[in-house]
Each structure stands twice: as structure tokens, then as C-alpha cells.
Image 1 (tube, helix red, strand yellow):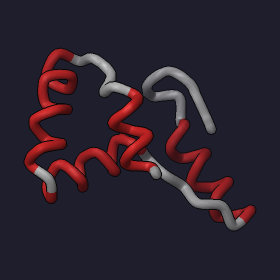
Image 2 (cartoon, helix red, strand yellow):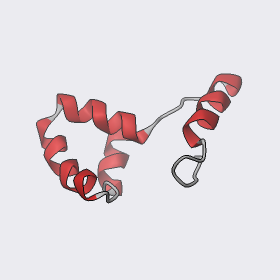
Image 3 (cartoon, helix red, strand yellow):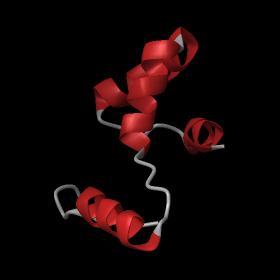
Image 4 (cartoon, helix red, strand yellow):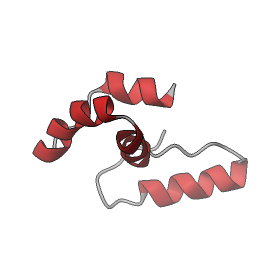
Length: 66
């Protein structure tokens, strides 16, 4: 897991590490966007948080990653 403030290069570093070490790179933002396109129920759950600039609840992220 790589953490840091917005614009700090987390995504770029995670992608490079995944490539070098043969790891899986999971970007929660992209995962949420893809799932929201396929699943209207998830879209309705995450839309209020995204519109308010809040974080999407961990339980939703964890279910998607699982």
C-alpha cells in the first residue's frame, strides 16, 4: 500500500513497483469508476461521497477489492 497526499505521485510509483516486482496494482479510484458503470447500486452508494469530496466508505472499497 502506498499512501500520500493528492498529487504526490502515488499512482505512478505504485505502477512502477508493480511492474518491477511483478505485483498487482489496484487503483481504488479506477476500480470504483469501472464498477459504477456496471452496477447502478454501487453507483448510488458512492455518488454522494464523491460529490461531497468525501471518501467512499471502506466497506465498499474492500468488497470491490475482494
